Structure formats: C-alpha cells, structure tokens
Amino acid sequence: MNGLDAARGPERGAAIDPLRVAVVVPAYNESGKIGDVVRKVPRRWASRVIVVDDGSRDGTADEASAAGAETVVRHERNRGVGAGIRTGLVTAREAGFEFAAILSGDDQHEPDELPRLLGPLFSGSADLVQGSRWMAGGAVPGIPPERRWLTRLYSLLLRLSTGFPSTDGTNGFRALRLSMLDDPRIRLDQPWLDRYELEPYLLVQALRCGYRVREAPVTVRYHGRGTTKMHRLSDGWRIVRPLVLLRLGWKR
Ligand SMILES: Nc1nc2c(ncn2[C@@H]2O[C@H](COP(=O)(O)OP(=O)(O)OP(=O)(O)O)[C@@H](O)[C@H]2O)c(=O)[nH]1
Ligand SMILES: [Mg+2]
Image (tube, rainbow, N blue to C red):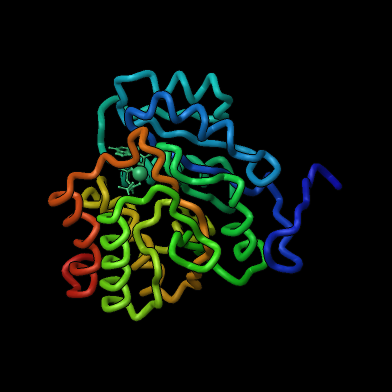
C-alpha cells in the first residue's frame, strides 16, 4: 500500500498514515522513564518520535536515543515544558509532518491509544483532539484524590472561560493539525508561554479561533515513579493564567 501502513481509527474511514504523524515528547530529567515512552510508541501510528530534552542533567537525551527516538533535540538550559513543546512542534512542522501528537515524557500516557486522537484528525472531523481521562472510556489508575478534584476544577474553569464542554483541559496527551501553527492568531512563540502556560494557551486559542476541537478518552497513569514537576501554587497559576489573560484580552 505504497508504504502506507493504513489502519482503521476509531472512526469509520479514518485511515492513519504514520508517515504524516510525529510524536512530540517534552522531557526534563525523565531518565528511567523516557526510554519506555519512546519504545511504547507504535510506529504503525507515527513514524517519528521527537524528544525535546530541556536541559536535563540525568541522561534523558541519551536514554531517548538509545531507545530509538528518531529525533532528539536538546536545549542547553532548562526553559520549561512550553518551550519544549514549541521546539518539538516546530521540528515536526519543518520536517514536513502534517499532524503531531504530544505526550508526556514521564510515562503517564499510553501511546497505544494514539488512534483515539489521530482518528478524528485523519477523518477530517477535528483540528485538535484533546485527550480526556474523565470521559467514558478514559482511565486514571492510581490517581491521588487531590489530582482528581483539581483536574475537574480546571475543566470547570475552562468551561466558564470558553463555553467549550471540557472534561479534561490539563491532560498532556493531545494531537493537532500542524497547519494551525501557521495561523497568525496562534502565537506560540511568545516567551510568557515557556513553562506550563503553552498547553492551555493552545487549547483556548484554538477554541477562540474557531478550530474544531474534540475530546477523546485516554488513560493517565499515576505510577508512583514521579509523575509531576509542577509546583502547586506557581505552576497552578501558570495553567490558569491563559484562561484569564486571553479572556480579558490582556494577552493574545
Ligand atoms: N521540556 C520540558 N519538559 C518539562 C519541564 N518540566 C516538565 N516537563 C515535562 O513535561 C511533561 C509533563 O510534566 P508534568 O510536570 O508531569 O506535568 P503534567 O503532566 O502536565 O501534569 P501532572 O502530571 O498532572 O502534574 C513531562 O514529560 C516532563 O518531563 C521542563 O521544564 N521542560
Ligand atoms: Mg506528569
């Protein structure tokens, strides 16, 4: 089939072509986990894994390469998860990919579930598909009680701010059509997005600009081997900030 490892996504007719898909993985000090993440990405869904090592001091980049990551980009100093995702998306775009899936380098996501996110992109029914641990079909093995209510509270804020019926706005597993990045209204290059702001910014701006955003159920595992680098207050504010600042028109 012309190198096309066609596969049926969750939607009828959604044949996923891995040659058009890159997986972007931001990673900061994820040795012991990043190798598993890279190995788990089924190459029948995505032909390239791009790991962005954001100034790690623990051999994350070497582990990613040894595990078979096709591209490893290294930031000389730590700049933040948003900067990492931006670098990964730009790298994917420049390499000619049409779609990118973003997943976490701390081994919380299940790359086997990529078709759930890619299916609606390939069938043309969505431009951005946000993974949701709280939709029917999603799962949250081992989730601590605090994460349970904080993630739901965030979705409520997102609903209030955008009107989108979000069930899980903070989940780092998502996929998008990369041509969105050519839209001058989606300004990922702004320095204020370098840390945890970029992910909610992308989601909110996609909604505000009228892109077709959907959710799809995914698993988020709380495996007890280090699943967060977020500082409760400062980074909590960083994920809320885009909702407030875009809503008020103070940032674009
Ligand atoms: N590039 C880069 N990646 C980072 C940085 N901080 C965290 N990450 C990575 O981003 C991913 C998600 O980071 P987490 O701190 O787990 O945040 P999260 O998954 O969005 O949220 P929770 O796990 O629910 O707290 C992981 O792969 C981290 O290694 C950073 O400063 N730079
Ligand atoms: Mg995490």
